[in-house]
Length: 188
Image 1 (cartoon, helix red, strand yellow):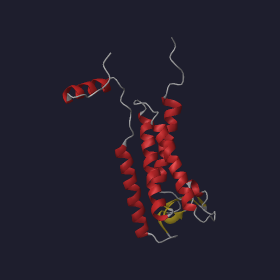
Image 2 (cartoon, one colour):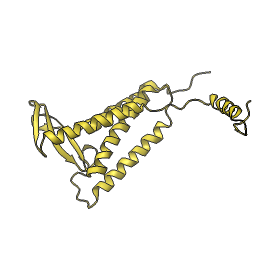
Image 3 (cartoon, one colour):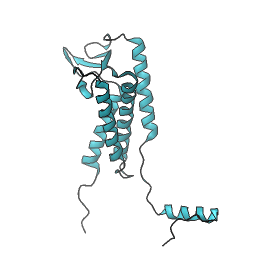
Image 4 (spheres, one colour):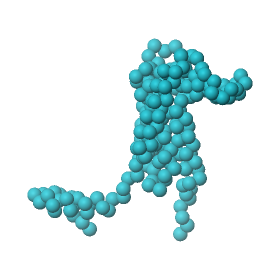
């Protein structure tokens, strides 16, 4: 068994001891930070484009009878919850809820294993989407939603790139939990 790391007065021996001490520790899996950054950038760029092209509460048809590019403010949380609530500092509540969700994502991310690639992708997508929407909440007090999917008079909730990434990321994480992880220990 090796000695614990103690750099002492010899920096070369100290570096060698540190390398030996850390070699035995399993490498903690990380999220795909590049994916998180790409999602944040795509989300912010698309929101800026919509803000410049579509006037507030207006829409432009992309696929007649199915898809419009809209410009709406979501002052609530997911699926427009709290959107119509008349609270004086609603953005503080919604920002606090977003921060709590980020804390939960961070906690869960610390417990996934290296081989759980689909969960790591999903959590990276959720994190990117959550941060993209959080940027809007802190900067504007609301989130800009712009994708309007509908059939006849039925409209799905308006959403954005961040929302789509959060949704697909959650699907990936749930798929990993339900189908990819072994549910029982190996028999002896």
